[in-house]
Image (cartoon, rainbow, N blue to C red; front, side, top):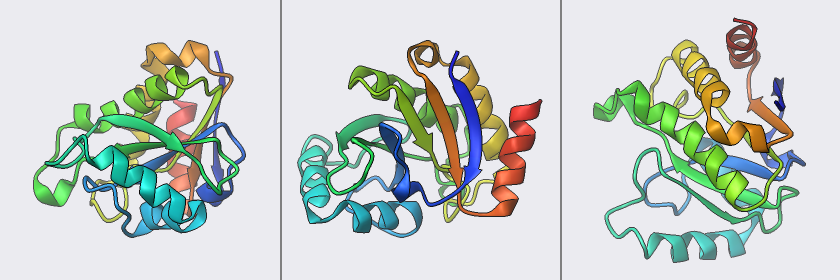
Length: 171
């Protein structure tokens, strides 16, 4: 089983094989984690996103995952996933869990041995951060792809999120 940890850091500076982007359904950049990844990965990353988007004219589905090259990031891969938006009525915990399990499966598919996650849907998408932490940790711990990885890390941008994820990891 891999080491599963939580740290407070900048996800775009992760040196793990893959980082997960909490993307929007249009895949063309936005705010928060998504915007930070787009800025750090450089303009070539947007071209990869545009190519992926051509396969999803109605938008990338909530919970799906797809790997793109990390471009200017240290991470070799960026795993795109779209979290459910609480404000838009997307409140099924299974949809949020799917973001984590599908991202793990996608990371293994492309040969990644380590992966870093943000707190998907805990920001502008309005999910309660405590709930996100519990669902994320449970989903990762139960994922069949977990056995193929050496390291899973939750990379969080605040002390509050870090404490919530560490508490979820300790239960």
